[in-house]
Image (tube, rainbow, N blue to C red):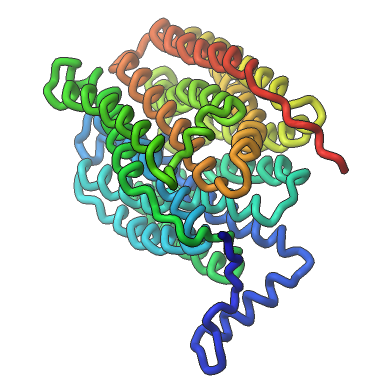
Length: 478
C-alpha cells in the first residue's frame, strides 16, 4: 500500500536531475542526517514565524501609516490565523497522501513570491489580503516539517526533537524583534516582509537538498468533499466569531456565517463517516488521547495570543513606548517560551504528559494575573515578569502536546495530526484575539486591562482542567 520514494527516482543517465539526486543521496548517508533534517525544517518554520512579534508591536504605527482603525489593523495578525486554521489540516492530509517533501517545497515556492509581494501592499486591505495568502501558502510548512522531522527520529527521541522545534519557532519572532525593530524604525514596516521573503527563499533552497521524502499512499484519493465542507465550516465559524463583535450579531454576513458553520461541519461529519478515505478518520476523532490535548491547547492559545496581540497597544497607551521599545519589551515572552519548551521536552518522559501540561497551564494563569496587576498599577517590571511567565507556561507544554497528539494519530497520519492541532490552535488564537481586542477597544485605563488579563487567566484554568484528562504515554525504554 505504501512505497518509499527514493531520492534518485527518475534520475537516470543524462537526466538533468541526476546531479541533484546524487547530492541528496550523499546527504542522506551522513551520520548527522537526522540533525540536518531538523535544522532544515526548523529554519523553514522559523521563516514563517519570524515577523509575528515585531509585526504585532508595529500595528499601531502601521495603522497610522495606512489610516486604519485599531480593530481593522488587527486583521493583519488575525486573518492569517484564520487561513492557517482552514488550510493546515487539508495540506497536512495532502502531505500524508502524496509526500511531505513535495508539499513542503511547493508551499515554500509560492510563499517566497507572496512574501515579497506583501512588501508592496498599498493599503490596509491589500496588506491583509497579501499577507493572508502568503501565510496560507506556507501553511504546509507546519504539518509537513513536523512530519519530516518525526519520520527520521525514533519514538523515544521525538519529544526532545519537538522541544527543539518549539524553541526555535519561539526564538524566531524574538530574532525578528532584534533585527526587524530597528529596520522598521529606520526604513519602515515594509522592510520586514522583504527580509522574510529572503529567509523563506533560503529555506526553500536548503529544503531542496535536505528534506526527506515520506511514505506516499497509493490508490487512495484525496477527500475533496471532506476538505470543502471542513474549510467552509471552519471559515464560517471564524468569520462569525471575528465579525460578530465588530459588526453586530444581527449583521446579515455574520448571521449567514453563523448558520452555515454548524451545517457545514455537520455535513463534514456525515461525509467522513461515509467515505472510504476520510480526510479526518472518525475513529481518530473518537480517540480521547488525540482530541483532549488539542482541545486543552486551543483553549490556552486563545488567552495566550489574545494577550500577546493586546500587549503592544497596552505598552503604547500605558507607557507611551515606540515600536522598537515595544518589541524589546515583548522579548521576555518568546525567550522564556523557547527555554521552557526545551525544559518541557526533558520533563515529559520523566513526569508524564498530564503533569507537564497541567503545570504549564496553571503557570500561564498565574502569569496573566501578574501581568494584569502590572498593567493596572503601571508597574512595568511586574507586567514584564507576567509576560515572561506566560511564555514559560505556554512553551513548557508545547512539545508534550505535540508528541501526545502525533503519537495518538500514528505515523501514517502525522500530517493530518499536525494540521488538526494547528487548526484548533489557530481557532483558539483567532477567538482570543477577536474577543480581547474588541473588549479592549480604545481603553487606556488600567482597570480594563486588569480585567482582560483575568479573562485570559481564566482560559489557563479551563485548559488545565481539560488537561487533567490527558493520558500519559508509556515511558520509552532506552
